[in-house]
Length: 195
Image 1 (cartoon, one colour):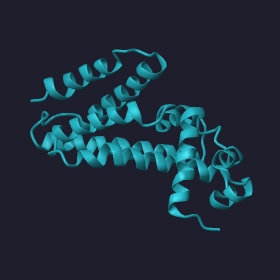
Image 2 (cartoon, helix red, strand yellow):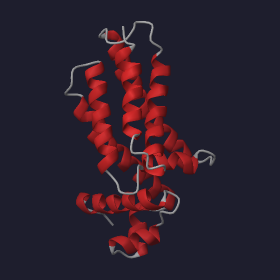
Image 3 (cartoon, rainbow, N blue to C red):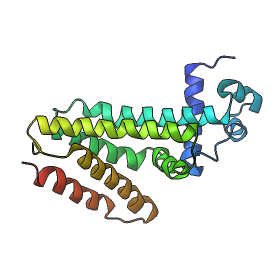
Image 4 (cartoon, rainbow, N blue to C red):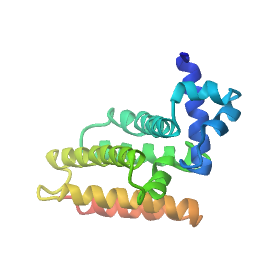
């Protein structure tokens, strides 16, 4: 059985919405089939297993993140302007993308201590994201926007850690100043101590 690209995208979008609200582990072929109005066996024919469905949903989330955060930032000049654009795109994405929060982040918590294919896939996606930040920061060093002796891995670590912190403060703690706190960190590290 084949699925049209539009139908498969609609199924993945629904699966992503469910994952955002209830977590990756709670996603099931039966529950998703009910949500999209298909039979369980019909949906199973497309994904073959819960694990494959979960991996495809994470890929779909990462693809959407890339399209909405990284790709538009490529229009900005190399270096800090591009990193600034990524941060602006990320803020817009995090505020509007999914009502239940970012499944890329929630999956980290769900699977950090659960070895297996899902955990390995989540590690791969997170590593790719961090690598993109490292490359962008490296370009900022090459463009002279940051000190030549900047520790690129450390800066990427601090950036991503603060992005995760922003999500905790804004979504769980409902801290109205969460973005202000993140922005203060970002300006201090990337704009005030740069040359």
